[in-house]
Amino acid sequence: MRVSIRCVGRWERAKDAAPLRALFDDYARRLPWPVEVEAMAGDARAPAAAKRRQNTQRLRKGLQKRGLSERAVVVALDARGKSLDSAGFARQLQSWLASGASELVFLVGGRDGLDPAAVSEAHMVLALGPMTWPHRLVPVMVAEQLYRAHCILSGHPYSGDEHAV
Image (cartoon, rainbow, N blue to C red; front, top):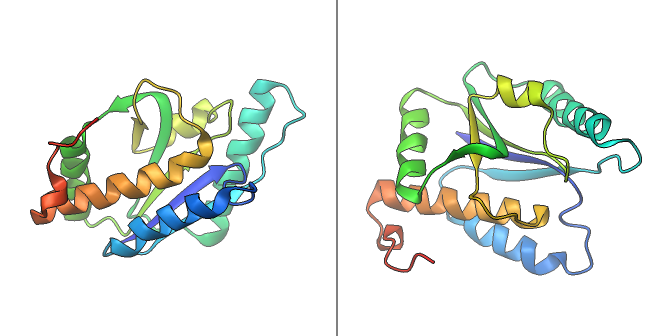
């Protein structure tokens, strides 16, 4: 399986992005699947609804160019999505793997979110919790939760929630 995190924003271009990239790479290299982040600049000039639509179209165009497999699973990250604990996310990941998913794609909108059409077409709409998180942390958080899910599924000690915050 291949994992792709497609996001609006320049998460690697901030002057202090090196620690974020290092942390992302640390989790990504521990996974049995390749994980990549594809970030694209958002349009900051348009009204919110237009920005949301344009930015989401950019995310989807990139997927179409690359050619998504019909066995790809698309997960839209949205504050109104389903909240899962780590064990629940691990069970969901196990289900996707068992069903033969060839690719797992996380879509992360800009500050105005994703277009409702993309959200409704996703296989799952997932929330990272009720708090608001900086967009540039999202790739790191997704990579960490993928690693934690992998540990849960393989019985690794990191999987326990005794240190949950």
